[in-house]
Image 1 (cartoon, rainbow, N blue to C red):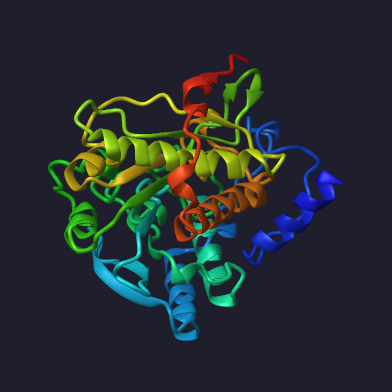
Image 2: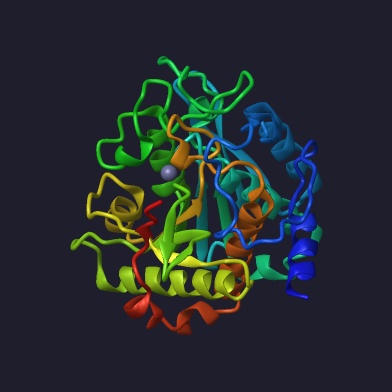
Length: 344
Ligand SMILES: [Zn+2]
């Protein structure tokens, strides 16, 4: 029963045209890793141009959506913001994806969620919450259009995806200095411009993390800098509670607590301190490409990981729109174990 429900959800979540979907008989955490056993085919992921076409198509279809260019990448690619602002007085959440170019399934999930907002699947949620989505902040890294070699990356074919931007900088260590054009665009034309209450920064981690002896489908963490305002931190913990409950109740989701530092160069910390925004880091299992075999998951869990993103975005906008986030029970944070690396 659980399996057939998950399979139905999987079929609904997948829109990547060329991928053949067969429902895997395992939860995403316990599914197989790559381990050199399959060909990593990045052609199943949307290219940057395909993402832009998709956003423009949705913008044309959806009255409530506004699409805006917030800046350009190092290589001159336009960076996009999809906006749903029905009432400036409403609370506002920002979803940010693919600061790291090789972490693409979060973007695929965000695009699917944008489509849902236009089809009424999310009900009247837009009456109670403003939604901002910045998908693929690092398109140069996502397209492998960078000033350094990716010859040792694992994926087959002519597209490699890398964590770094075109000049080799980790954008998620640039939130204090803001040197890179991608980071500047985000801060100048999104963070400083809108009254944002919540942010989820979506990433992918390696494949071998486990909690309580079970491989995880992802991990979450609130700000961990001592400089964060206690109320902002509490909001982050409530946001995490909504995400944890939504993913955990799917039956295939299994989350650990991410092990992260206090540096404010990282968005989870820096944006919470600088703007007073309640932030949450969400790391999904496995990357789209890497030079390290233990980081790449392969395609068998793609559907679940996209679905995990949609579930996360859907649950959080509903909880903000109906106000239930204000009473979310944060006590699970006291017992949620930090993930550890499974030793083979
Ligand atoms: Zn990342």
